[in-house]
Structure formats: structure tokens, C-alpha cells
Image (cartoon, rainbow, N blue to C red; front, side):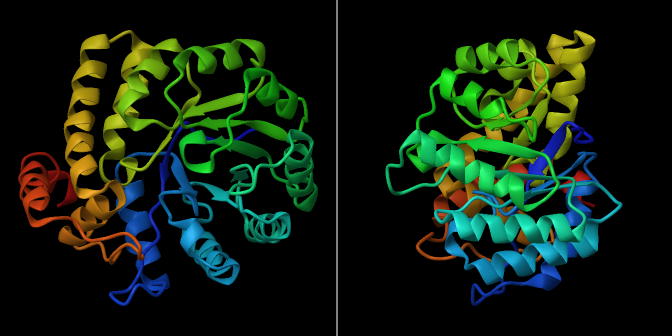
Length: 295
């Protein structure tokens, strides 16, 4: 099952100032992201604050993005949820509105038996005729999948691969070697160069909303054997990421985009606004590295 492209922005969800959904903010954000040369967007995931939204809100945003992005770029819908029925309903929305793929975290909060996790993924792929990307992010879900567990899930032909958001590059390489016919996308932005050097089918990340061109460049540079360029671009990304760790990654990214006239609003509570001191550093970095691209 083919998923066009390699570099996908894990898209933010635009909110209004009162933290209600802003469907009006989807189009300008998508325009800004696509202009950086990425292949598409991964919507409704961790970066999209999915766990802070109702099923109805997530459905509305998926439909709006489909209307804005269909035919312009690859659209991947994250549909994972704590409840199987919610994930299944969102998968059907993605299937009905023209997405190229779906993705899902494993069911979280409760400690489920692995057979139940398998049943959860089977229910999702039964719901629509789209390839599924498993979203492995154990630091947030609390679900630690062993290599053999991942490979067991990947035995299903309808599961196209994995978004791997962790720091274990050894496991990442082992999975790629054991399942060469699957797609593996790396999701830890600050380590993308390492995954690209090992061999990755691409990347899906939060900071791609703002500097997606850097990750496009890293991916191309590694493929061309240009390690100097790859290192330079990863250093640029990591300078930004170090500042975002101080502001809060999502809050900092939203501040940056709002500053450039892309109306994404605030993060939802319990996220707090960035400190004034951290924003001084972020604004200085943006003035030096992003303003020209944004204009």
C-alpha cells in the first residue's frame, strides 16, 4: 500500500483566542506548511492536541483539512483514541473524505493486554480501506512495544508501517531490517539525522510546521551523501528545539506561527503560555532564521 511522499508535518490544530476550534485557521496553516516543500501533513496527532478534543471536534477538523488539502498534498489522519469505537469512527471519516492513510497510537491510560491492542488495530483497519501507520510514542502513551510486538502487528498487510517517536535508534534499525516492505517514519525531530543515516522512509514531526524545509533538506542531503549539509540543517533545527523545550514545544510553535500571521491561537488548557523570558530567545531566533522564509 503506497503512501506518497516522505516528509510530513505533524500539524497543529488552530484554535481561537477562547480555545474553541478555528476551522478558519486550517487553510492558512496548511498553505504555510506546504510552502516549505514538505510532502504532506499528519493531522490530529499529539501535536494537534487530539486528546484535548472531543470526537466531534476531531471529526470537524479532519473534514475541514480534507476540504482544504485534498489533491494538494498527502493527507494522513491520526485517529487513535483511548476507546476503540472513537478510533473506528474517525477512521471512517478519513476514509470517506479522501485521506491517503490513517495512523493511530495504541489505546492508552489503561494497561491493556497485547492481544487487546491487536484487536484495536484490526478494528481500525476494518473500518476503512486505507493503509494504517502505527504511532509508537511510548513516552506519552505508556505503551512500551517490544520489537517482536511491533513485528506481530506489522504482519497485517493493511498496516503499512510505523511512526517511530522514540530515541532507540537500534530498535528502529532492527524493525526496518526485519520488515523491509513496510514504511518507517521517524518522529523524534532532534534525532532525525541519525534515523536518516541509518535509513528511514521519512519523518513526521512537530517542528516541521515551522521549519519543514530543514527536514526536507536533511533527508535529501543524507540520500546524496552530503553529511555536511545534513549536520548544518540538524544543528539549525536543534537550536530551535532547545528553545522550544523552554517555551513548551506546542506553545512555542503556536507563538511563532501567530507572530508570522498564521492564526493558530493558543494551546488548550492545561497547557500554559510560554514565559516572557523564553519568548525573548524564541523571537530572536525567529528573526534570524525564519522571517525571510515566512515572507
